[in-house]
Amino acid sequence: MTTAETTETNDNTPAPLSAGETWRALYTHFRPHRGLVALGAAFALVGAVTGLLQPLAAKELVDRLGGDEPITGILIALTALVVFGTAIEALGGYVLGRTAESVVLAARRTLIGRLLRLRLPEMERSQPGDLMSRITSDTTLLRAVTTQSVVSAATGGLSFIATIVLMGFMDMVLLGVTLGVIVVIGAVVALVMPKIAEASRRSQEAVGEISTRLERAFGAFRTLKASGAEERETAVVAAAAEEAWRNGVRSAKWESVAWSSVGLAVQVSFLAVLGVGGARVASEAISISTLVAFLLFLFYLIDPISKLVEAATQYQEGSAAIARIMEAERLETEQTEQTEEVGETGEAAGAAGGPAAVTFEKVAFSYRDDLPPVHHEVSFEVPGAGMTAFVGPSGAGKTTVFGLIERFYEASGGRVLVDGRDVRDWPVSQLRAAIGYVEQDAPVLAGTLRENLVFAAPEATDEQITEVLVRARLDSLVERLPEGLDTVVGHRGSKLSGGERQRVAIARALLRRPRLLLLDEATSQLDAVNEMALRDVVAEVSREVTVLVVAHRLSTVTLADRIVVMDAGRVRAVGTHTELVSADPLYGELAATQFLATATAPEAAV
Ligand SMILES: Nc1ncnc2c1ncn2[C@@H]1O[C@H](COP(=O)(O)OP(=O)(O)OP(=O)(O)O)[C@@H](O)[C@H]1O
Image (cartoon, rainbow, N blue to C red):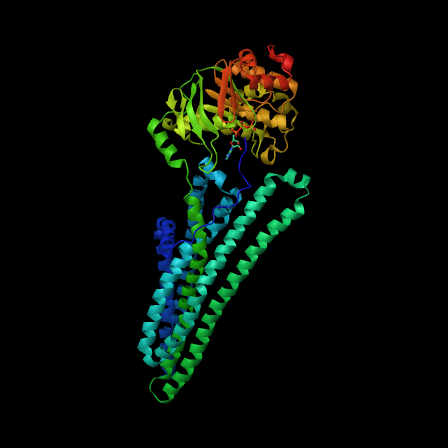
């Protein structure tokens, strides 16, 4: 089978979300945690109010000092305000930090759940590395935007208004001076914000590209080395890393402009208030204590302004990440279908025993609308137990038959029936539970041998595992390994030989106790002794189970009860080896080129 895995260009570049969509997406992630965010906000607000009370206490202290009144009470009150304010802010920070982690966890859970249930064509259109970076890196940016920035905006906004009101009570003229400076600098900050969003989006895309490239390189590590491609690939990944760096620096530059504007606003307004206020004290328009209190309020205004700028910055960074997360969440999955089905039937998949019947009725199929059809009116019938082999030239559409039975893809015409029932009417989980599938390249997953064996049958007992090890001729391998079944097999089973990987894949499929066994070139890498042994095992299994085999080596299919000869997406002929050798020229040719005697026992051909 040919897969379009890593060579396609990434067509997942997210379209920019509108402001409304960003808000809605933000709210979706925020909503389940709104109670805790509100609690964190309440703590922050109390902390801010405590902060606001401090200048009033300070004013009182200065007034009492001037009037020679006792100051012990007011000193205690001021100290209590400082201690309480610090404690409550720390508590608020903890509640928010914890909630932020929960937001990230929830987003990751949802994404992981969805991405592992993607429909196969959707996965083939995507870049696995980029999808991974959406789970790992983009969700991290969600942390700040759904909690800290919401709270910062709320508390900062409220504190800002409250401080301004209190400053207005102190002196309207000084307030006018302060607001004049803030408005000018605020306009500068507003101009800078979209630049932060753009830099952040590009940075996240570059991070996705790093993951994509690394996944490609690690997935074909031997080929990478054998092709001497280390330096070229390093340069490509490094270029993506530099792109992330460039945009990170760009973002830092604009953030720094925003923050220095805030600093400037505070300093300029401080000086302006000091100048204008000094003159007003001199002209006795306001008292010295009013000026001190006003300056303290100005000092406290730094905090809400900083919070508002921080919220805006985090929002800009988060909006890029939200777009990428949402796009991954929108990819088509099989999830809903499976959930409904399990509830609907409530029966363990594959529980109803007996070999499955498989029928193709004039099946038409194309992998993509813009590609030519791979199947044209493919029809055949497999009534039940026994072995059916699919043979034909490379690209004839044999593996595609298995993909349609597993319902990885949907036929565009005709019907695929299992047990006389259209696969579209089967609950997908039940359909697949009835099938044991050994893929063409016999994938073995990172982990231990045992984990690989029970991957499709987590409930398998030790006795069942032992039995299947013997059948798959893996028992001597396991005995040789120092850690037996608990031996780690490496990334994609790289510590095993090709033949061992195939036997592990066969054992995994057998352990599932399927009603229908699909073997795609499952013994192509085995030595003659092991191949013959496993052929006997498959023949034995086929007495109780429907076995479909794709094979190029006709020696493995001459035993088959029926052989389906495929060519260019069509079924040319169906029959036994003996029938087909004389009846179908293509099959005769295939048999001849594989040195098969035209009517002999299979053993002679190995
Ligand atoms: N996921 C896919 N997306 C697009 N095209 C595909 C995909 N898988 C297979 N094809 C194409 O469909 C055609 C049939 O592929 P298929 O794997 O079914 O052939 P096959 O008979 O099993 O070949 P082989 O014997 O070489 O494994 C080929 O032309 C192949 O390039």
